[in-house]
Amino acid sequence: SESFFDKLNSTKNLVSVEKIGVLLAVTAFLGHLGMIAWNRNLPILIPFMEDLISKNYLSAIYTPFSILLYYEVYLLILAIPNSITKAIGKQFEIISLIIIRDVFKDLSYLGENSFDMAHPDILYPVMIDMVGALIMFLLVGIFYHLNRNKIGLQQVKSLAKFVKFKKLISLLLTVIFLALSIFHFFDWINILITHDYTTGKRVAETGFYQQLFTVIIFADIFILIISFMYSDSYELTFRNAGYVISTLLIRFGFAVEKPFDLMFFITAIAFGVLLLLIYRYFVKYTRPINL
Image 1 (cartoon, rainbow, N blue to C red):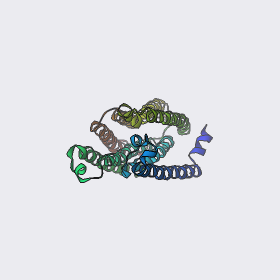
Image 2: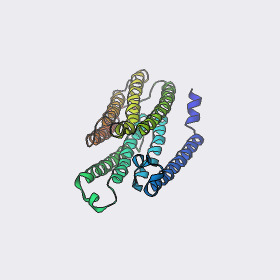
Image 3: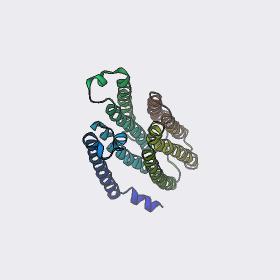
Image 4: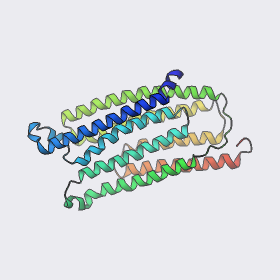
């Protein structure tokens, strides 16, 4: 299992997956643009397309973003064995990208005339997402700034065994990720067939991430428990437990409506930033040995 994970995480494989992801994103983007053009000019040829596809070209931007987000999730899973902090940073990246993607979706709802653009009830969700995305972008930058330099850590007993265990967890998460992707793809198709837009739209967009982050929470807790076998560091245990709380807040964010989802997401990242700041202070100034 370890050698299989190393193949998945190899530079050659990551480059191949990245190329496939970009190709799919470009293809989906062009395909979506084509369907919008068809719907705007020849809707009578396929009557049901008018209900399925927006007539605003901006809505096509949402599609490649969604595909690229799946690639980011893949990188998140592969980051777990290398660094828990790097993995939590990937989680923060993903939710910030989801929100900036939602900005494009919100803009596509505005319409193409100045009256709609000036309507406060329509502009409100757009402005909320834009401000929220900027705040998250700033916090993610601060998080990586705090983690830019490695600080001395206490030696972890049998580190190789712990990394091997985390690789196994990553492989299991990869299988679950693929299973969830397939399930929610067919669920999305079913929503399109039944035209269940009002009740199914929110579920189709967030159900995948709700379930994914639920699985990640349990994986993080499992890793946290096993880590006690390899390290007795108080600050490391506290930090890793805090990361689980950040993931839990992200999961809650997918279960609520706007603007409360942004409140959970921003709180999750802010908590992670403060947690890492205090952890680095703790390690640097309170431990006299090999720090």
